[in-house]
Image 1 (cartoon, rainbow, N blue to C red):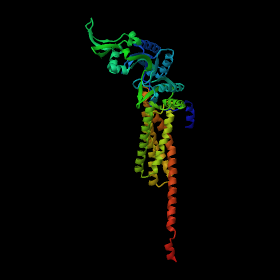
Image 2 (spheres, rainbow, N blue to C red):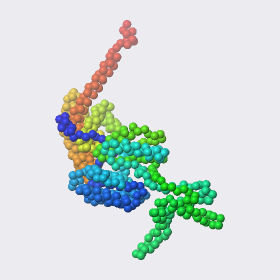
Image 3 (spheres, rainbow, N blue to C red):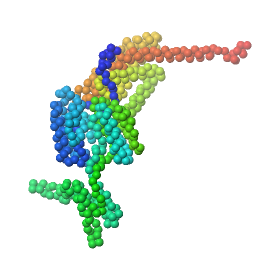
Image 4 (cartoon, rainbow, N blue to C red):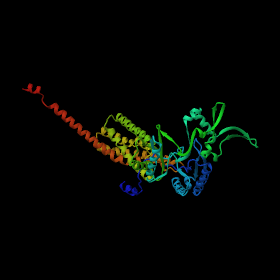
Length: 508
């Protein structure tokens, strides 16, 4: 066993932590974002550049692009679905193809592109740091500092901010004193501006092909760009001789500025998220390195930094899994106590549980997987599977020692010889059943592969070490219990033989 471990040692990899396993579904997704306020034509032009770069991949089958994403239908965002050849027909994984495409897109300008090998909905990136506060300006400045620190962490890709930069906006500041004297309300001002930007419905129109078209009236783009034109928008007020109109600029100051493209809130506070994807390492390792760098920054008063994305869900899920694992081990111990009628004998059986973890880590390391939600499910299954080998040994040894009245060591040796065959048979059957899951050759099968690898590795080491460790541990525990019982019995016997004062007086 030691020689085999030395031979495979160069192929070991550090076992990191992750939320979900990396899965190859022969597809990936690209999110293209042009600068805020960009037109649909500019977004289409940049998407065509991304499509041209994607077609350079030999494994490509087809792409499907949608412009205008989200509930708001923003035209500065496009989503692209990329389908590649099946796993059996290509030599590069989806992760490798995504890395090649990211490198190719760095030579293009005028947009930002994020590549997702797995889409969990909404274009959400794998990791995030949520920065909360009350001051929007200070929050944006500090978020840029955090982003700069995260950018220096290896394996960080597709780094960006949830605010998506700034976009031009028009500010209308109402002179409330003057407006109040004229009877002008904020609602009236909003209604006067609405036709310029959002437009108003003006009915319908039947075209020459007899198709009914909805008609919406809106100012031409060139008249929506200049403040002087917006100031001339008519505003209806009530006059002495009936309704009259005045220019909007008479009761309001109109100016242009830059504002956040997206405003998010978390726990009723302003929030800016620094988001990124991971390539080449586990999400747990990357987040740990990012937190080390970010914690060196001086956090401004009133601001907080919390983890988000997969790391937040991973912490919650792992806590639940570890709690379930502890409850399972406790219930197993209580059942064994009732079956064996002893509180000490089940301890020898429970000692086989940590032995399986050795194989779990070795298997995940050799396969290049992480400790994720699927591999932890395999650990929970192992807790019930590996205990049966120790139960077979200890149960037979107790029976042989009591029925044949032989020393415990001879009983354990006899139990190992007789129970070896059923132990090997059940172990081989379990490994054979888990091999297809561990290989993960089909489309999307890598998601379950860590479960099979964890179970196979844990069963192998547990079977080999249980035959050596559990008999030794049980014999040591048996001898210690016998010594304690002999010492207690000798002490009680000695106390019973000592003459009491009453007996001495009677003897006199």
